[in-house]
Image 1 (cartoon, one colour):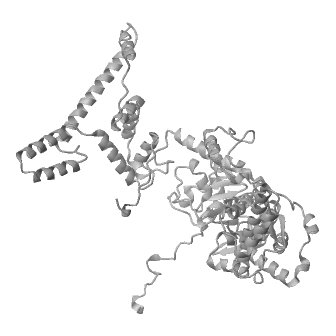
Image 2: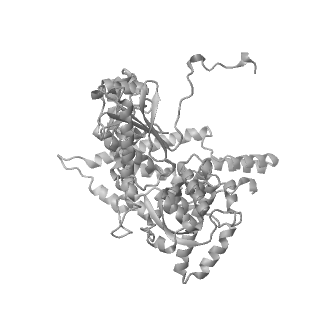
Image 3: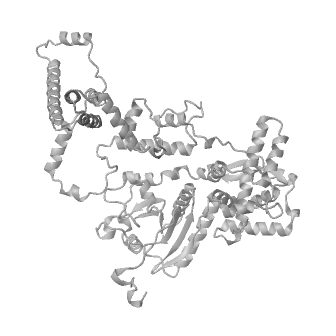
Length: 615
């Protein structure tokens, strides 16, 4: 390309592409915003905050296994701003993100001048949690840099921070407004309760998220896990995200492997529930070197129950060992801090040899070496789920009752309560939560609003009429009143003076039904005249073609007679079935009106075979 053809990106006000966080990553910014704070002492004060945050993390998250990255802070300079910044990649463990929020909220209570902003790839996720109770003017388009944690509370910067304009704030604008007008920030107890709802289960959730399980592993691996239990996270991820290149290390001979399946011992291994579920859920055929180990273990077991336990522990050990084997190939080159720590431990172990490995007596002295937690939290019973949705807890589990663990029950109850409140909210529309005033709403006059209110009062819903209409549309016979009902209706038709004539209303309804039927009949006749109700013209086309080949007058008379009879009599059941089947086929296996109607009738159609397979 010539120099004349090159594009100057500095033109037209281009300042670069917007920065965006990677998926499953939470970022947090910590500011000391106090007008009385001297600039010379700002760096030392921020360093004190960083040390306090580290001590706070050790206090609450001591021994916690982070999915990928831990809670961490470093000093950051951005133009005139100096602050602490941290980022945590939480992977599939969403609880890691909320643990970060909990630590930040607790930290804000220790420093009166501390203001904290936390966000992830979805933006202001705290405001997303509180979307049901946010002010009408606050929308996702303008919420950037408006949510701040201070003194354990959640504050929102008002529209005045952007000079009354509905636009997002820059970080500099937000910090300047907090310094100058901190008393004007919005604090709502309802918004704060919704945004911090998940923090109610902390700090107990930190302990409840850990799972211990008995696993059969090589002694070398047991030593590494005992020295640093956190290195299990990158190993499980290496197994969970394995590829063909990583699998090559499992097909080599035992002499080339770091953890060959010999000198196996059964000990309790510490997981998080996410890591354990990731390992447990994977289907993985044993590598060739492990096949003989499974055969020998099955022969040594005494009974069927013992065989099941032994094989289950050996399978988990095989998966975990395979993960460490794949991780060991290039652990020292990974960005993950825990992977590099594992590489250093493995290197020291291979240099020192077997003399550092623990004996069976040493392992028996370890705390919790035989701990094996219940795995029932992995099981989801459909009946329990339905009972939980209906509020009938504990029908199938006795006194323990409930669906899943306490965390799942709380989240499920909140979902149901929010849905019920939405259904009971007369101001909510079909599009969901009401957002900020739109241009269309501004154009509505008070007269239009009064007319719409009057229309709403007039509209009513008659279940009997709707049921009757649906039965007629589906070609089902309508329910006729019995003779006794007719007699009782006739005998009760006398009106007592001074009372409301109920039968008069019924007569009006009957007259209205007759009028509607007459109108429908006229429309049907007019549509038939234009050929709009000929839903299945193919048989008539075939008859017409057959008639053209029949030169005899007798054949022509027969054709005319059949055409007249087809116009007078339409096979409603055939057309209804044909249209339902075509509608069901157009759904392409997805949910749709035809499938829903057939499901309510107790019918379930089989899936169509591929049309390319022939008739």
